Image 1 (spheres, rainbow, N blue to C red):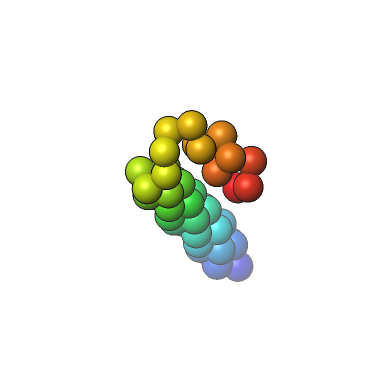
Image 2 (image 1 turned 135 degrees about the horizontal axis):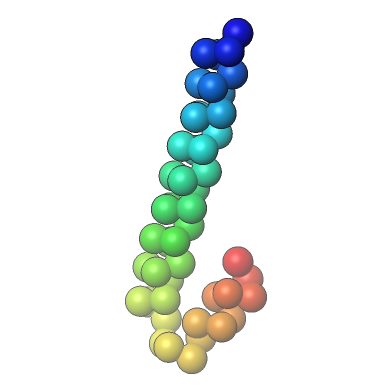
Length: 46
């Protein structure tokens, strides 16, 4: 039971890290495509 619970916790942490990494990469990719002054608009939509 205990090992299963820690495995679930690890999966949640790993999933969160992947989501954060993907969202950060996506934001960076969008920022590179758009002019610099549109960066605040991207943040408002996110």
